[in-house]
Amino acid sequence: MHSAADRRQIYGLAAIWLLFILLTTTLPTQGEAHRPEAERSLRKLAADEWRNATKRAPGSVVPRPRVLVQANVHDYLEIEPTKFKLNDRLKEMCIIVTLASDRYSRGLLFKDVAPELKDRPELGKLKRVGHLSGVDLVPAGDGEFKCESVPHMNMDESYKLLIIGTKTLVGSQTIANNSSTTTTSDHGQARFSARIEANSSWGLLRGLETLSQLIFNVKASSQKFGIGLVEIEDEPRFKHRGFMLDTARHYISIPKIINILDAMAIDKLNVFHWHLVDDQSFPLESKTYPQLSKLSSFRPNMVYKPEDVRLVIIYAASRGIRVVPELDTPGHTYSLRHITNLLTECFDTTSNKPNGDFGPVDPTRASSYKIVDKLLHEFAQLFRDEYFHAGGDEVDFECWQSNERINTWMKEHNMSGNYEELTNYYMRNLYKLVKNHHKTMIVWQEVFDLKANLPTDNVIVHVWKNINDKPGYMAELANVVGAGYKALLSSCWYLNYIDYGRDWLKFYQCDPRGEPIAANDQHLVLGGEICMWTEYVDDTNVVSRTWPRASAAAERLWSSTDFNNPDEFLPRLEQHRCHLVRRGIQAEPVNGPGYC
Image 1: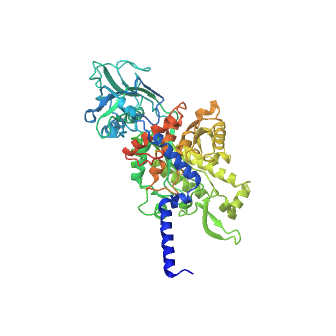
Image 2: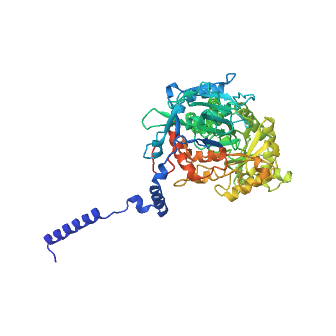
Image 3: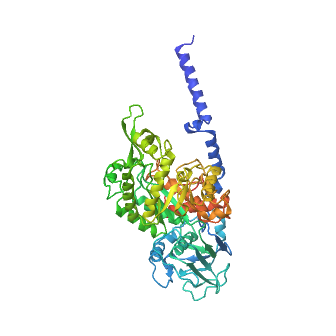
C-alpha cells in the first residue's frame, strides 16, 4: 500500500509526464480529426500549388478575345489617368456610347490590381516605349453605324481594338499619325494611336470593357498605368449568353441585382433571365391581382414595384443586357393560390374531400386561361423584350389525379389517365396566348420531352436536366436541335451546386456545340445560361457564390473553342477575380491560397 504522500508524488510525476506528452506531440485539431481524407488531400494540393494559385496575368482579358496579337509583351505605353480621354468620333450622338464613355472615364478604366514583383517577376522587364493620352471611338469601315439603345437577340457586338504604331500587326489599315491620340514617345519619333472600331453601340460597349481590362498598374502602390501594344478583333461565339436569377425562393434586393448586372457586363453576358416568381413567393406588384404580392411575398418591403423593374431594364440596357422575365406555369404556381378559379383543388383520396391544398394551374377551366392571359399582358407591358420564358417544368400530377372533376373532363376529351397529355394541352393553349402578345416563347425541356409538339419556328427549348452529366445533357440537346428547335443549355452551369476546390474547371469544359451536335444543327444552339437558384442563397452570398465561377462559363459562351486550356485560363481568372473585386463585385477566391 502506498501512503498518501507516495500517491501525491506518483500523481505529480504522472501529471508532469502527461504535460510533456502534450507539449511534444502534434495532435490533430478538432477539425482535422474529423476531416475526410479527400478534403485533407485537397488542402495539401492547394498548398502545393501556392505559386500557380496566386499567379496573376496583369493586362489579360476575360473572356478571351477571338484574335489578340501582341508584338512584344514587355513593351507598353504609359497612361496618366487624369489626362486620359475617350474621344467619341461618331457622326451623331449615341446615348449608349455617351453613357458608357462617361462611366468608364470616371474610374472604371483604372480599377486594376497591382501585382507584386514576387508574384510576376517579368514585370521587372517591362519597357515603356511611349505615352497614350486617349482612345478614339469610331464606326467600323464605311458602313452605317447602328446607334441602338434597346438590346436584342441579333445585336452586333463585334469590335476591333487597336493600340498600335505606324505599322499594324493584323489586317487593319494603318492609322494616320494626325490622330488625336497619337503621341511621341521618349525614345525617338515612334508614334502610337488607339481606337475602338465597331458597327454598333453594343460593339463599342464590349470594346470599352476589353480596354478596361488591358490597362494595368505598372507598379504596386502607385498611380502609374500602362497598356500593351495590341490588336484585337473580337466577336461573341453565341448570341444568347445569359444569367438566370431566382428571386422567389429568397428575395434579392434591387441594389444587389444592379451589382449583378455590373458583373454581367464585365463578363460580356447579355441576357438577364429573371425567374421572378415560384411556389414560395410572388414578389412582383400586380395591378390586376394586387393580392398576389400582398399575400404571397415574404414581407411588404420584399416586393418589386413597376418602377423597380423599369430601373433594372434601363440599367441593363445601358450595359447591353436584355431582361427576359419568366412566369413559370402550370407548375411552380403555389404563390398564385390567392386567385380564385386558377389552381387545381386537391382532394384526399380516402374521403374524397378537399384537403385544403392546391396543385398546378387547372388546364380544364376557361377561367384559368383568362387569368394567365391577364398576367401575361402585365408582363408584356412591363418587359418589352421579344422573348418570354414560360417555364413548363416539373409539373406534379398528384393533385390532378385526386380531382374527380378533372378526371371526368379528361375522359370526355379522350385523355383518361394521360396527365402528360393534359400538360401538353395546357402548353399548347399557353403558346397561343404568348404568341398573341407578340413574344417568342422559351420553355424548359420537359415541354419537349412530353411531346407537346409546339411550332419549331417560335419556340426555344431550354435544356437543364442531367446536371453535370455531360453525355446525358448533350444527348438531350442533340435531340432538341435535331427536331428543329432552337435551344439553350444550362445543365453544366448550375452554379448553386458547389464543390470544394476549383469547381470552375467543369464550367470551363462545357461546350454547347460539342459532340454529338450535328454540324448542320449547330446554328440552332443559340447559347446558354448560367443559373443561380436561391434555396440557399440571398443578398448576403448571391454575388460571391456566383462570381468568378460564372466567368468561366462566360468565356465558354463568348470565346472561340480554340481557347479551352484551363492552365492558360487560371492566371487570367485569378487576375480577373481581383479585377472584379476592385470594381465592387464581391467575387470569392476560387484558386486556393492567395490575395488581391
